[in-house]
Image (cartoon, rainbow, N blue to C red; front, side):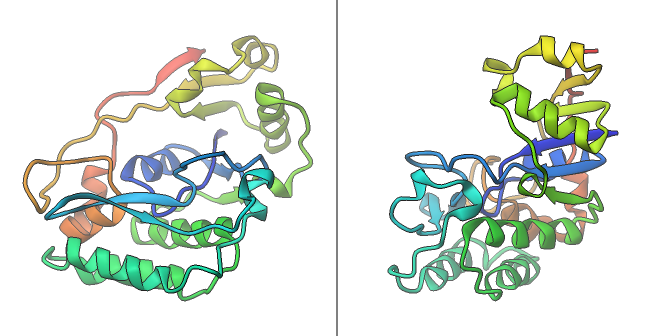
Length: 236
């Protein structure tokens, strides 16, 4: 079984969904420490007529001392949903499938989730359903895995019976390949190289929320979802 484990993001880019579609089981790594500083966990970019703009979900003070699944959305910042709604409309209203993209986002925020991870997971599942991605999605917090870095990943992979682990390429800097060999688990690094799609506002920009793809090409989104290059095999 092919398994991928990465942290959740707020309305992620298309590569995130290609990653989910590339595995048999997708695990959201939600019981590790919330990163300090700026993070994709609570924000993403949208392309507007005035360039790239950030959509940021405000989180409560002290988030960096918590695990991701414990981080709460700040109740002290009013109407962040209204701000995001307005920015998405300004960016994508002229796209042919804008209504479909906005319906997915509205479904996510209408749940009034108090915690960031739950909001992200709700949005990710809704977008997967639209993209016809049927990969089961589970949470690492539902498993009793211990250890640090690679050892903890191996513990999670062994619990779910993984034979292949698909990782983001950024993990090359810290994964212990010997542990994968010792446990008989194949390791692949996900490839992210994609075909451009019709997009508003000038020169194409690919590293934006997947809502941009959906708004612009709608039901044809899967055509632009697959990487043009195979994954890199690090441990056969």
